[in-house]
Structures are given as structure tokens and as C-alpha cells.
Image 1 (cartoon, one colour):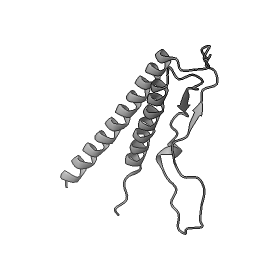
Image 2 (image 1 turned 60 degrees about the vertical axis):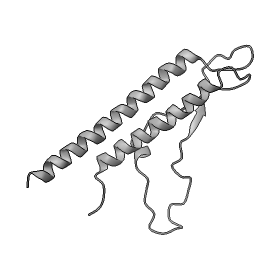
Image 3 (image 1 turned 135 degrees about the vertical axis):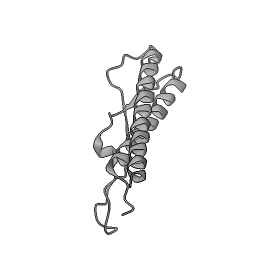
Image 4 (image 1 turned 30 degrees about the horizontal axis):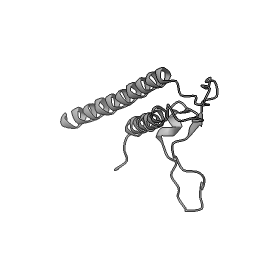
Length: 122
């Protein structure tokens, strides 16, 4: 009975993904002048990212955790010093991640308000 409704898990997962993506983008911006640094990004959020499977036994479903996974951006032209960070692109990606985070928090907040309203109407 103390289970969270699925929408809360999904919203929390989306917010967590957006925060992790923002951290990857911040690392890219911080290394914009580092020779040889390759820009990274994260795969888009998936519904599977918002939910962690439960294990009934320690040996059941063992595998990699739900840690944030980033990948190297391959379609980016590098500067003569080998750096592939494009600041304009990183700013746009950062704005996209911020919008995703805001959207996830809005869904979470709206769902919480809906649940509170339903509980008060007994």
C-alpha cells in the first residue's frame, strides 16, 4: 500500500535523467578549450530509465545498475587541437535538458496536487 503511483516514478526518472544530462553538458562546456577533449551526450530519456526492476533474491536479475550512461558525440567536427565541443550546440542541449527537467517537475507537482485533491474529497 505504500507504493508510489507509476507517474511519480516516471517523473522522478525523467528529472534524474535531465539532471545527469545537464552534468554531462556542463563537463563539455568546462572542457571547451581542452585539447583533444571529445564532447559527450546522453541517450534520450526512455520510460525504462524511470523504473528500476526489483529483485526478489540477490542472484536474481544481476547486471549493470541504472547509472547514467553517456556516449561520445561522433558527428561533430573537431577543432585543429582535436577538441569537439561546440559551445552554441552545448548551450542548446543545456536548454533542452532544463526544459525536460522543468517538464518532469511539473508532471510530478500536478500529479501530487491531483492526489491531494482526491484524498481531501472523501
